[in-house]
Image 1 (tube, helix red, strand yellow):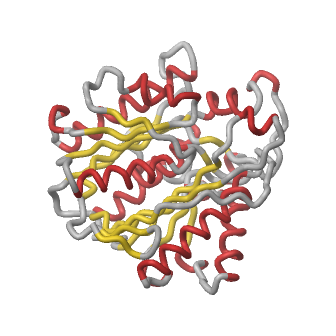
Image 2 (tube, rainbow, N blue to C red):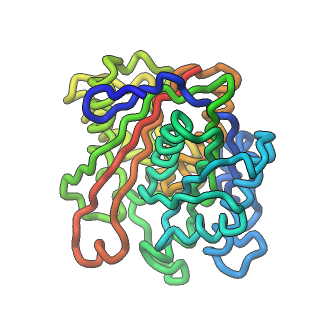
Length: 333
């Protein structure tokens, strides 16, 4: 590994994204990316008694799927990085409790998938042969914890986003023929004073820009180097803010920039307001759609920047502002 600038690491022996898998909920299965997912559920409970148990089952089965697809024996996985949105990351820990794989629980809110991949790549560059990375979220469990119980039927403002029900998982390996993780840029906490829990895009967009600009400065690259620059879940409002903020920094990203929260739903037909969000937003869009584009070489250079709002329900109730974080990972063929 080689450090570039203050926040970026270049891998001298880039680890391979060996395989990916994703399972999503029924609303995601009715969206424009449905054909790229491994499995689309028909209901939110999936045979379980609670939404939390359903989310734990989703990440468990997604992990089983990626292991089966990779051909790697569970015993040959050196460690796992996983996290979710629920208190104490119970979806990940309960979903993996029978896996017998060394486990690192991580939390970066909706940036957790790229945070896990970044840590996994560092391990693969050093001691690990195979690292499992996964995350999950669930619309119903997230609404219950962060906003209002669904039974209340509260009105959602236009700036709100729809938490993706699903899970994304990948195996990072020391061996393989790509796609390769070539760089990671670890984000800093950025807080611009936004305190509206129904406007995550505005809260996270400044962190996205901070990491994006840092990545370009550290690597000497420009937006045109990448086939696509993809943010985690800024949604429609956050995406527009990000484009404008990038211009103020001297970068025009409009032509090759998109957002997972924009891609996963049909905004008008599915009434998702500002788009998708949640840990599974970035995890499922990358593990399904983007990974398949990389494998088919329709995309060869991807900059994935997952964004997260580092708050919880208590901090919002106490009137705290919402700190943002964004982690970047460069993936190339």
